[in-house]
Length: 401
Ligand SMILES: *Cc1c(COP(=O)(O)O)cnc(C)c1O
Image 1 (cartoon, rainbow, N blue to C red):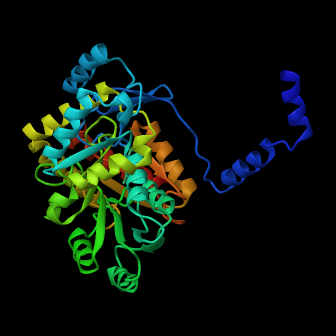
Image 2 (image 1 turned 60 degrees about the horizontal axis):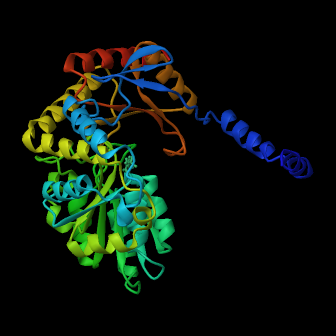
Image 3 (image 1 turned 120 degrees about the horizontal axis):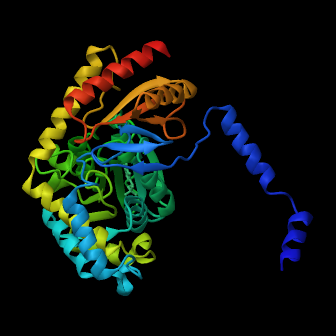
């Protein structure tokens, strides 16, 4: 057996050659990604390469991932239900904890129904591909998350890319798409690399005018924006006008899992056609219990959102006061500081890490060429004085490097 395998590799191309070339090419462009191992610690800290640093790179906006109440809820269910869900939801993976989470999500979002997905990525991919088909036209923001982009591609629909700074163009292309069977507008609520909000009222207007179904991904907005944490739709007063709302339990809610809320028809349809939900094992029941607990915390402590908004404002002001402007238009906990050159971006991030602050160094293809940036996220784990200290260190490093 082993002999035969060796023969095949000798007789054929060495597949590693082109992989090595590809990697070398990325290395030359300063775009090679290196994986690292992190030891998570509570209160916004983590250990990386043996160094204890403050984590300014996580999406744990409300500092819930280590919350004792979430941990207790998960532990309780873990000992009762085991670790894995053992099957997809339609077979026998949907437990009472899944059902309770679906109900809690629908109530939280003030929508008639909700369906869970293994991740936010799966929710976006599966939902867009299930709703749109080859006779349809999909309009997708240029800065949408990869999962929405891939969902659009997978749908086979005619794809038009627009930019939310140029909605006139979107209006025109929508008008020209009258012959399509159906039209869909697909957008992030908060753009994950720029930290700005989608112009939801304007998009609702365009969707209504052209009979397009509006699909909004609230991944970075759930638990962050809106008085009750229902995201950008709540923040902009657009809730009644958005047909499909997608979210994730993995960011501000500190757990894992994607979800879609909307009409009972929408949810039933997705249960019957979203392949990333049908053909994937259901979420671990303990994770569902933790996420349900998160939603209860949000309901009882809406001041968490106000507190987070205050910290974000304080950090932005501290940066501005030191001559380090966050990317224009960014709002809330995603604070991008554009550096431009990918190698300098990585260098500054490494300097910050050496001084005890972990930030994201984001390079192409995650962002356009020439806009490499530090992606700093504010969470409730960091007090205002820490945010101000960090702003000072960041300003210093940018002056030096
Ligand atoms: C993170 C993210 C997702 C994916 O969510 P996961 O639960 O991590 O799979 C989807 N959309 C946007 C905009 C995101 O930032």
